[in-house]
Image 1 (cartoon, rainbow, N blue to C red):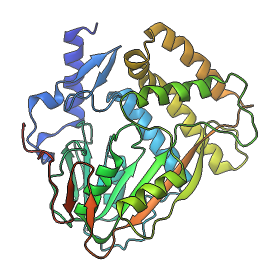
Image 2 (image 1 turned 180 degrees about the vertical axis):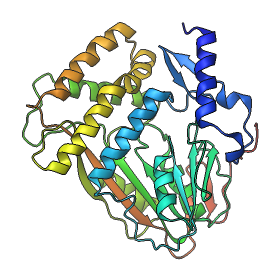
Image 3 (image 1 turned 30 degrees about the vertical axis):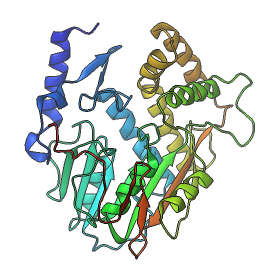
Length: 349
């Protein structure tokens, strides 16, 4: 059990460093920063349980390391959608520490850049064109229709339960000719040379992560064909999927990929406990000490220079069709100018 005095001190320090109520567009209720603690880690309070990873400083460091790894994989591109400098509004879904938002805002100072997350862990001081919002993207959005030039996600597998609904929201709130770009990393460690050992600890870890997430209706594995099929079914046009590999460790010969692998390895070594503990103890029945023992095996394997593992990584920039369309919701239907059956973010706060 966490010492409540120590827990309150952690929360207070965090709020002082990162959270400025005036920078958020939602009405910040006390429940949003009434964080939950489990196995020594801190978790979000708003919509408690919707997101299963911690939001504490250790996890924030992991997210930022992961961000740098993926940005190197993408050749320093923030997005691949063929948008111009004069775009007006961009939305980052599941913004985390806000690092992508801050980078886009710096590069496009005349563009309003929004970030949505369940946790208020973004920087206290930001550029004037940055706005953050505490929200659940699987509820109805607070933004007007036809509002954004780009809706961006990065590594939201394991965060969204209803991707078709998410794409519906994107189509409603994107301008005609706007783009949704999903940048996703499949939790399915692979090698091209069969260097994963027999009875691989990393392979077993991926399977357990997948099994735990399936129990609550989330996916962690994806392929390019799966992404393309969902996008086409949602109603996007000019659908394409770019495929990349994010190495784990410094085994690649290429200098830039070796640097990428170093960032990814450190992110995993420092953050794998947060990625694992709640999932395995809540949904697979593991004890904390057994999880910790298993993670030691996974870490040793990831650090082996004989294992040339990587995460399959995909980017899919997809164009909003230029004509109005009817969008299936799965909970009834709607036209592009309205959504039915979804709660407003303003309700209940």
